[in-house]
Amino acid sequence: MKNVHNTLQHLVWMMEEVASGDYKQRLHMQGDISLAFNHMVDNLIELSLYDHLTGLLNMEGFQEHAAALLAATVPSTHYYVIAININDFKNYNALYSSEQGDALLRKVGHFLQSCCLTGELCARLHADNFVCLVQGKNAKEIIKRLNVDDSDQWQGITSRTYLFRHGIYAVEDIAVPVRRMQDCALYAANSIKNEPQKNFALFDATLAQHFNLENSLLKNFHQAITEKNFHIYYQPKVDLATGKIISCEALTRWQSPQGQMVATEQFINVFETNGLITALDFYAAEEVCALLKQQLEAKAPMVQIAVNFSRVHLLNKNFVQQLLTVLGKYHIDPHWLQIELTESAFMENRLATLQMVRELHEAGLTIAMDDFGTGYSSLNFLKNIPIDVIKIDKLFFAEFATEKRVRLLLKDILSIAKHLQLKTVAEGVETKEEVDFLQRLGCNMVQGYYFYKPLTKEQLLEVLAEQ
Ligand code: C2E
Ligand code: CA
Ligand code: CA
Image 1: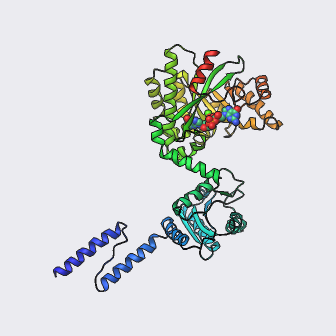
Image 2: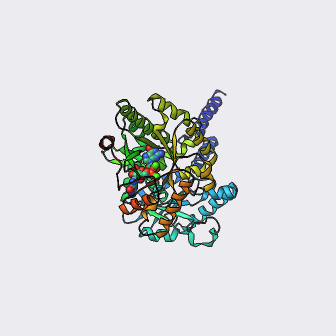
Image 3: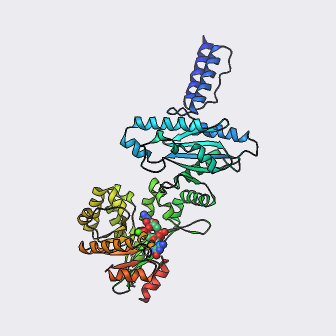
């Protein structure tokens, strides 16, 4: 009796271990119980490597099977890891139902699996992210094989030219962990997220450099904040009526461990996704307030400074209070600080922005709508929102010389802004022709390389002292 009791107790303990994910447990006893138990664990292992929805391998399964496949491969075989993502899948899910979304995922999974040959793998990692390990002569040939866009079975799913975007990682060294290969392929696919005319991207040397830099920045983010490895540059805004600097914009740069000064623009999206942007924006605001304090106390020349705040802050009800706390800490009157919010942030969250902008205004801060002309704001909304400045996006000036329509549009924007009594800043102005044009049409300020590139703090103080 005691023997049975011990065996059962051992079995219960093993079950608990297996239930917690330890599939290494095996019963080593004679008889059916052992056989049944070990068989069950083998089945669980198999199940844990597959995706329930599509029946394809899941992330763990892909990594395990791909590592085994690559280890057994002959050196002359060219393998590629391809990440496949469905464009607009989020919209599709929202527009129809999650059941239909699931059905689409199953259909895509089935299709991709049918494109794979013997010795190749197909998996769903998560959501609408699929990955394949395939052989081929080159990336183009593989895309042709996997390119489901040619088939009419996908009609009506997206309004884009392509339903899928592919990221391609060529396996050159099988010692690289499969996890990294997969992440590189996903990174390549994501790099063309906002380029609807493309359906594939190769993980090449440029993307690899960017990927490594991004990983390094994410890993070192908190250290970079505490050690002040983010540097603030200041780009002057010149008043076209007087030719003097009347304001400037704070722009952050990250100094990498290798000493490179990296513009944070390329990381803003990543920071917005993981929420780190909040810390970065407040860091910039504190640096700016410290500079304002130093100059104002010394009664030295100073101008109003604009700080960029991400759309992420619109979700934070305490944002205005937090900002006022920073201003209070440095004894800075709010009129010295301007808040730049992009036009698209305004458009995404109209009610939240309206509320926040009102609060900021009441507190004495001024607000600029950044990148104007890229976010489709309605004129009615512009009329009702208490902003002070619109910053005309630099894209207009990329086509200024060649496109007459661009010049006509600029003329209209400046005239509307005047009617609404908004100040105007033109960004990205690089030529005298552009400056003369803007001056003639009554644009108030210019921020661009024609006058100044972003300056270090020391350079800014020097030019302010000279004027
Ligand atoms: P932005 O707010 O539109 O900033 C203007 C960008 O245009 C700056 O790029 C500036 O260097 C660049 N620029 C200025 N004049 C010219 C010109 O004449 N020609 C050209 N081609 N470019 C010009 P930067 O510093 O790389 O910053 C890019 C973006 O990153 C900013 O765009 C802003 O959206 C974002 N950003 C920078 N710092 C911060 C920050 O602290 N917080 C947040 N949330 N965003 C930031
Ligand atoms: Ca800005
Ligand atoms: Ca801008």
